[in-house]
Length: 365
Image (tube, rainbow, N blue to C red):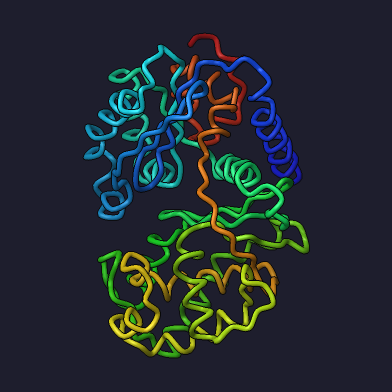
């Protein structure tokens, strides 16, 4: 545990220092791809231009189909997105993948490694599967860069589609419980439904109790991972544009700060919303349609996190974060890109933790 925390602190410091020095040093020509659960984004060290394409990696994994069906669109993204962004220089190229690809490795390690090798052979882009702690380090570095002095808490909470990260300077915590994956757990548990976006509402008192017990079990290791007195800032749109305005409306919140949600108000909003139908909720809170389906499960997820951290409230500040600057500054990622054959051999043996080994000890590229 101490080693992980020390490594995470070192990695955060390195990433922040690299980002801070980027404007002073001659830029290294690098192109990086952020391969998230629902799409691919590209950026470069010598250009502010970016490009993005939507690809759903999670749904086929949940259906037991693996990532094979995503091979062609992923290869197309790795080839075409730099051209769309005007990034035509012959730069070093690395793609970082996260929760969906970690899940793919857990389901079929050999198939995932074979797909990564095929993508590199077809596109020239080294595809890396990042450990959870590295993803958290990227998230906190990005939050510090974007939010600046507005970031006053020890950690940031970033909820994606397939996973969440609580990232700070000294420690990070992650779970494969993002907006969509947590909703899927509830669909399977409460409705015996294989449909990831099933209708959960109305939820009974018994349903709420089951959901809360599930979260307490899944977050049982959180207190031992994060330091005491952890404070949180939520930065993701499911919270800033979905949960936060709905809680303020339903709980008639009188928080001293417009950027703050209390655990008590979240619980009050859950109680008022649980017995409503999805259509009634949509009409009541006027939330964007893409948030309404997940609104109650998102509230439960946030409530469970605050309960696990012992926090009475959470700051809510939306930030359009990109892990691309942190990834572009990650020398180790690009060292692995230059020794990709060695990385793949180690990935086959140890999965995402291959990143933590030393590229300099490779005998061949």
